[in-house]
Image 1 (cartoon, rainbow, N blue to C red):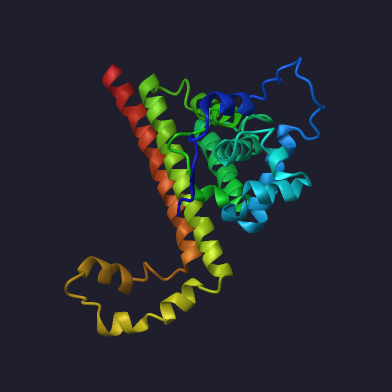
Image 2 (image 1 turned 60 degrees about the vertical axis):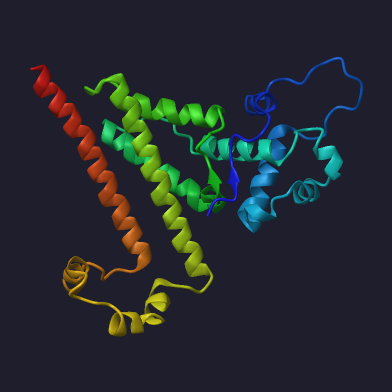
Length: 258
């Protein structure tokens, strides 16, 4: 469920805020009472606690204890703020802090683990489309980390870029599914209760002869896990196969070169 899209604010103002350009000097008026960082963290607190839909400029001003019109002296509006919030969440993962794990696969797994943790901490991330991402420090750290992990292992530069994009798309998708399932559980719609309420479908509507593959997997126990566990298993399986595919590309290229 997408509520917001990044990249819809004023480009120059957004870039200046993302990279914390110093304000213009020489203008009269009082010194700002809040930093951009304080405003962004205030917005994240509201979104974490109340959801992205509740995070309006009015609500944020109340969180910060300032007037709504005063808030607009710091940033143009919610579109720019969304970009700042997303990038702050990306930075928060600390991808490039500390010694990297040994091996490119371990580095990708670290990326996936930190990203899934970020989605759990900030469930509203799944409600922001980043097809046009904010060009801030968080995005560049993400891209640098993944390309660094994939460097020197036998991929072409184009394959490195493609592999990084594939990892980002897969991990974001499965992280969002984990959040969706957790929130469904919190609202009382557990996987078990959902299945129980729909038992009549399997008894009265499902045609085993019309869906033989589903029937075979079902009868062999392939669906004998709850929704949360299925999502985690699908993530682990899918990421492993994605990395195997990258490795196969390396091996195939080495064989061809040889």
